[in-house]
Image (cartoon, rainbow, N blue to C red; front, side, top):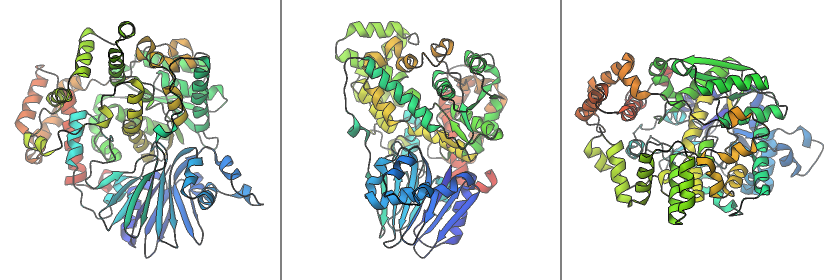
Length: 606
């Protein structure tokens, strides 16, 4: 875990402010401040020697975890010093020998920045799926980049809300679905891209596109397909565990995290576990699964309880860390889990986040599979799927079929009615209301939907994990966000992916010799926090929301219709409707505006 930042001019004062804003990413600091650039690096002691290197011609620095460094070294001319090189030296020599193509040989997660001193050119390379973060700002003259948005905000730029992203947040209940952020002019560098800045010109090219690596389109399942998928999953989990740091697994009691820790232990890798539970879920089946795993596999478990009021009391801190509004309360659980891991000296956190999207679980994939079967007139498999999916009610089935087959403008009207209530009509009309979220674009078949979500739907969970981990100076791994896993899973037929109702059957199948059946075959529940009930029953939530509505600042916002929001809150409190999700989003956006736009002061929050 490290952090970098930079500005294309000499300014020690701004550089120091930017470094201070991300100092939680590592206590060791390195600066380069010359006539052309102000560049900064913060890192942990056990990582710093591998993440920064300078000679007469180049400076290389970044935030990366490389899994195949020995192989990379073997690609270089060998000499007596070959075994004494740091990771940064090896990567720089690869760049010198292979040019920009060097990045194609790397396995791992990374942001690698290279300054070519002779030409004052900066190149920044990002891993295939953007697991490591890099944000940038460019106004035609000033170029700024950083591992966090906070470092860019310290470089004396205007803080302007991105109205389109605020609209999308409400309309599609999503963030991070494009490379735009909630800050106008600040962008998230795409995964699989290379950024070049030279002579006040900025260019971004893609060095990796997942579609270019699709080799097969299998229609028949085979033992070999499953064997390869199994090998890919196990290899990714094993290679992501580092031997020179203390590893810990964020254990939820579900299939994904349970697969990670049991696979690691089966391969003789040391890994502790940590978990968070809310008081009202203390006796849930997920918690029971956790204790079952501890008893069966004998690993160390750290468990912490939370109360509903903890979230509202730490809301500003949580938003400061995430930098943008959060769509789900589950992100706060991740934040508290990272805090627990830090308190027990964990250095590298392993999480099963993103597995739901990668393994086709959820309403989007269920709906797409229904559409795929309908378009093929495959009524036999359709009825079989619906009968196997215990989560579906008749109402959901009818809604999904109707939504899937409806014209696009009908789907848009439905979304607007559900998610834009309480917003100012003038603000709604000022945005691109015809814009279609790529993440929610309805595709004709499961594989196309999977590729779309991999490209545009993983970044929210990646950011949520990354921000929380880095705040506590923790490194992190997302072993299911792996090219070979994604492509080998894609090659399985849709009928196999969605077998028994679309509940990760392929992952359950390959884990049958590793994970005990009581956990492996259990139905996923997850911790769905009852925000509807909390607004009604917990005084702190009601009072906080009412204080927002009473503020002159909120009343003057161009985004909200104050009268409609007050009416919505009153109806919700009186059980005349369920508006918890919408009230939550209004609360998040207003708190974000107040913290980052109205009275931004990161020192006070920290």
